[in-house]
Length: 228
Image (cartoon, rainbow, N blue to C red):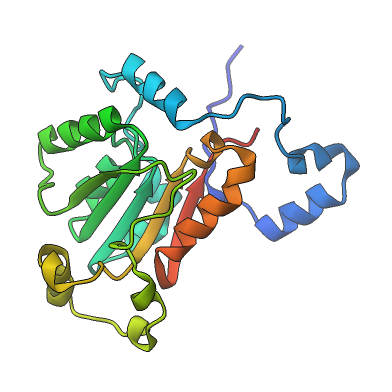
């Protein structure tokens, strides 16, 4: 008996407003809107540090090659852009972006010192990727801590000139000449890929608000996670 080919779906395959209305109006589907059971143990920074120590070879995580298809906004971006990758792990999200988009610089955080160092090793050793000025990992437990001011300081967030665009050359100067800048001026994309589900439910609004605070006006948070 022949088996049907495996189907692959992306977020743009659905009309999300129509799907939301269907779920909200069908009692048999309301469990999709029910928060995770509070009895489940939340994942915390110590748990993730231990997990990454057990999988220090990096083979557990595969490069997410589908990302630019799943998020065509990344693929279509031809101008200089800055990306904040939240919960970078060993770099499985960072790799395909750096490989395909020479115009993008990525700032990536994780709560584990070991995994940040491992991500640096993997990215720097990958053939065809020049990461010296394009990949900037840093340590942060984003589930309980605010993003650093150097990403998008309060002064710049409230500045009337925050909507003004600058040339690629000026942006590159902003990245390399940190002494002359109070911050990098916010990011064009935040990627939150299979990360939010590892955050305790009560901390999720804080994490999302912090991610939003790093975005320049009109820019995007790209999200993907488990549906359970």
